[in-house]
Image (cartoon, rainbow, N blue to C red; front, top):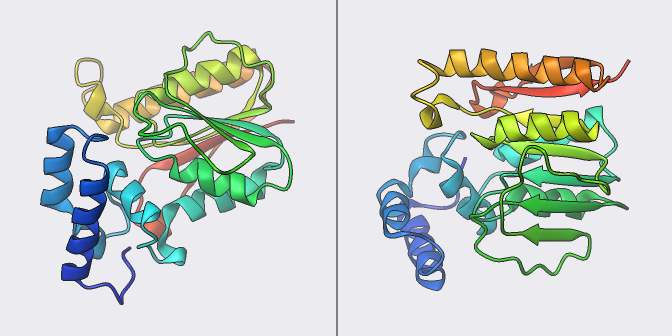
Length: 229
């Protein structure tokens, strides 16, 4: 949710300024979507990732309504964040990865996404790599893999966790918007991903797969993670 002290004219000005500075980083259709929906966050905590990342980059979000903080709180509650963590599908702006790296006292964060608008970072424990990971890729230095609404990257993250025997935490999104030919609804997609995750955890001896929600952020989609025995 956008901070209460920011009015719609001020928000519009900041979005326009950001797009002017990053006009080459977004496609015409993306810029059209951003300009058409820039005020989405004034009425809801659950916004499309392309907007949420810009809001976070411009420090426009209330801390207690910032879903990135909520996900990182869950991660910190169930796992040790001071290890080498790979994030899949970090987005145009690696908002989650940057926040996680700033919380770490040791370890590292490596973010993969072919949509990253930059691979430059001034955070020493953060690495940004502009490409997609393949499901069978080896990650010898990683201790854990995470994904925050990575859409089709969800299944890739699950297979990477299995093949590399890594702990994982993944926040689901509506999913089926990218898989209309395979899934008739978001519920079908979610059930399929849960099956894949439980199968992967069983085969790689990663324990059980747990499911929790972040409904305080108006988010109806689950977060899954493995719990070793």
